[in-house]
Length: 345
Image (cartoon, rainbow, N blue to C red; front, side):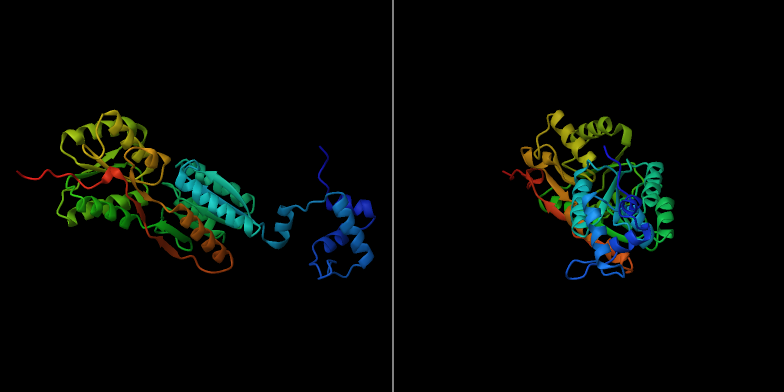
């Protein structure tokens, strides 16, 4: 593999200074394609020809040191394999590419120390802005980035006491209220939610919405909490107890909880929705291939990604970050179909 050609290599090749080379290569082009600089046209032509012949590629990092702009953005999600996060990342990358930006991706794995390290790496590489889904304990790390004047947009989850950031979220409160209303109008009254013991604001917001929606319809809330490391075992047991205790419907407010609930219902031999109705949060191919199809709340990740990117670019141009709530999109499948209530004889 040949070595990378530098400005010094070009200067030696042509017998001129690196300053002259830099002035030619960094000059804007006139309509006729020649550099708009005070270098003799013949010399400027020779510089451009040598750069093409030797396949000279300027260092974006070095250029960024001169201009303060690296055309590099950072994106951090909890888990890039999660459909909601990967879809948002795909949209962000597509839009960034059209504007000449490259993307650095990272996954926090819900680990604050890992998040802090990723943010440091991104800053060391001179990113022009960051789009991030916070994890528990990441407030100080994200605040450090903001304090250095780097534009930051939070997606999917909020940190309420951080100023100077943009925010793009699904309306989590509205999403769960809509699910409870759907179950109520379809004849279900004993509706439980299985959630997770995580210090994540979006999850707490969904739990609060569930409790308040149930109370507003004069129904008794039944919120069951599982430990992250034991959720598969605990969910299976909770589903067994719920079915035996007369629970008619389950709401799962996260994708992993949703898939565990669906798996548990199937493994326990329960019929959907006759024995246990189900409404999930986030998207999975399993929801559309299962028979019956599974009802779910879409994160609208493509919209979240597009809105977040647009907001970040506006912040990079000097505008203030704003809060943008995305309206939920509910997909109704057979798993929450109207309850079959036997008619009285």
